[in-house]
Length: 225
Ligand code: HEM
Image (cartoon, rainbow, N blue to C red; front, side, top):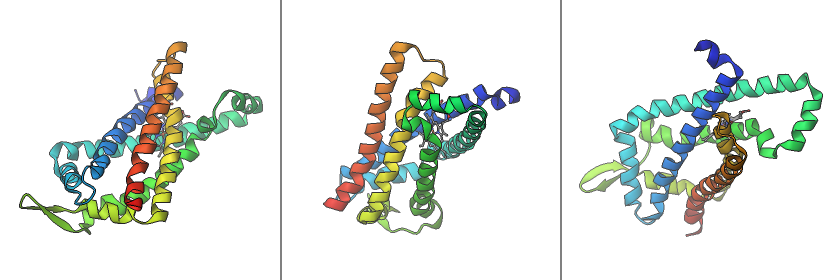
């Protein structure tokens, strides 16, 4: 098993499984964030949903698994990329040939990933640390119960134009990562016949557009209205 996971196929398999796990996580996260638009004045729906996510015991179990998913994806992403660079350094023809048959996003997965990672760190400092550890946010009363006012924390940042700009650019980088990543993960898992390759590429793009547009529309709403 240890030998398999350190083989190049094993590493790619871990990349695809952790990546697909993160793909599902992004959809859940987007669903949660979109509840902000259901009640954009008081943010009651979002506050209840965010409080559920912060306190539910099942989510508490999922959280460390999610952190592990990110960790595996990032560490193996760096290893796979370093190996690719080493292999290409030994075969200059492969570099020319690859440029003809691949997309810009597929050749820059590591840089897009590093950009997303930088955003992730800022995002964790801005939200997660305050919600989970420092408690550095207001409270609101819903149904006679005091809970964190996560809505005010998030929307006060979304009212800053340059924050929104960085936020949206980061999601565009993630969208480009996903444009290649989604179908590539299925290909790694062996689902790569000609008809399905084209279909998966289309699904990849639809998914990437949903993620970029869905996450971006929220800060834009609070900036404009
Ligand atoms: C929520 C965020 C992310 C998602 C949903 C995601 C998803 C994926 C998926 C599904 C793949 C395809 C794997 C395959 O081809 O089998 C992939 C590839 C890749 N990811 Fe991510 N990723 C994310 C963040 C990151 C980050 C933060 C990094 C690194 C800093 C990263 C680095 C890479 C690299 C280098 C590849 C290409 C590996 C190869 O050459 O095959 N990703 N990603």
